[in-house]
Image (cartoon, rainbow, N blue to C red; front, side):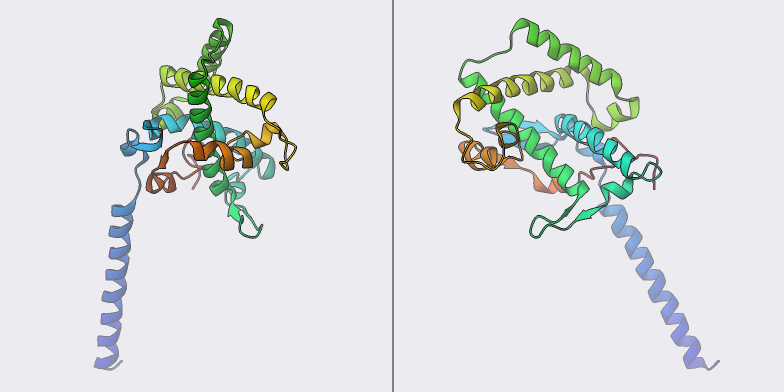
Length: 231
């Protein structure tokens, strides 16, 4: 081997080593540590802030539902479902992306309907509050220690969010009786949901909403409260 060939190989080794080192440094710098951001604001509705910690309630609910689908799709490797891509023109997206979008929209619908319910003087009955408290307690009891630690949720936080959810649902039912949904493609249940056209086109624009997209984009759905033991 000539000196020039040896020199070329040496330079190549140095370049590759530098590239690998740079990749490792970049990965270390850009790695998102979920727990470090729990108290950062992720969504604001009419100047009311919700943190990533509170948003964990919606992450858990959506992940729990989608994970059931994932186990039906591939019991041995549920991540395959989360990484499945559906081609539907401009709406093409991965299951994980749709789950993240659904978590955001569900959170928005609960917060907005809750506020509109309060504005109209609607509240839960004592029996409904008791049912919400039991549901919150059951949900908390059903979460593992790791899931609670990852999300930063407590039973008090879960109850507050469950209360909002139940009041929002009660208000949505009242809207279903007052609004003519015949002009919409889907029925009231779908249209009033966070992903529904009625909510997106009619309800949402009535409120001042701010979303921390940088934080949202770092929420790796399918990996926050589920599939923690999979590579």
